[in-house]
Amino acid sequence: MLQGGEIIVILLLALVVLGPQRLPELARRLGAWAVELRTAARDITKGLEAEVAQVRDLAGEVTDPVKELRRDLKKSFETVDPKRYDWTGPKPVSGPTPEDAMADLERIERAMEEE
Image 1 (cartoon, rainbow, N blue to C red):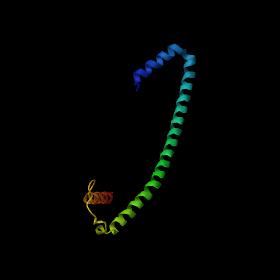
Image 2 (image 1 turned 135 degrees about the vertical axis):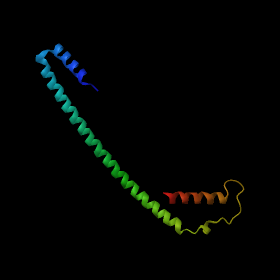
Image 3 (image 1 turned 45 degrees about the horizontal axis):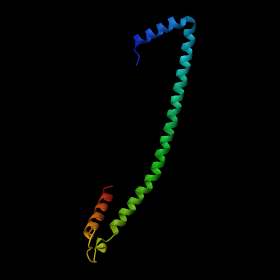
């Protein structure tokens, strides 16, 4: 950022280089450009805020059904009888055991409950 002393030096140099006739004209042009830049920045900010609002609305439209689906799944897991899924067949020769599968299912259920 420019400080007061630096601005004064710049103005004096501009007065010497441009002269007293052209300096006011240049100051008017710089002021007009500054106004245009502020207006453009304001318009861009408004546009970005509108876009962000749209994205938030869309995110709400997506997350609400997902939350509802999670609630429904949680309710359905609560109504399932865990004894129904006990393994009654022979133990597999290779791969995960039925106990591993049941432990995975329980981990998934706990994770859904935490959410």
